[in-house]
Image (cartoon, rainbow, N blue to C red; front, side, top):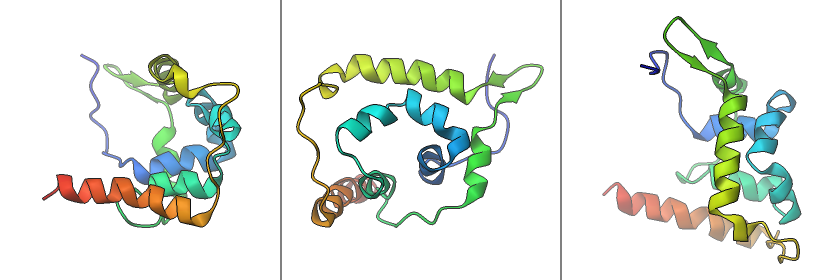
Amino acid sequence: MNSWRGPRHGHVLESAAIFILDELKPIALELGLAEMIDWGTDKNLLFSVFSHHGRPIDFDLIAAKSWEAVKSHNFSYDPVVASVEIGAMLRNWFSEAILQDADQLPSRPQFAHFFAGSPARAGMKCHR
């Protein structure tokens, strides 16, 4: 059985680390960074996604350690290999989102605020 027995990690800081740190760029590219850039996604909009719990990102470089490969006698996980598999699934499931002539996303701060607020508000309703 291939199951994780190590320390638990979150998903907000760890996600931000993928798209900030150069050493994690291979993961970001597999997860669609080039396509997001083509859409006009800037770092502010991307960070509004990561702030979906309603709090700004307080980035900590420790989050980058969450993406180191892990191998033990009964478990192995390579985040680059996993990102290749996840990226392929994303491109398959959301193929219409990756169009050559698609309109770019707005880059105004008001759009980022609205965009970040929508999932944060939905999350608050889910936790009630």
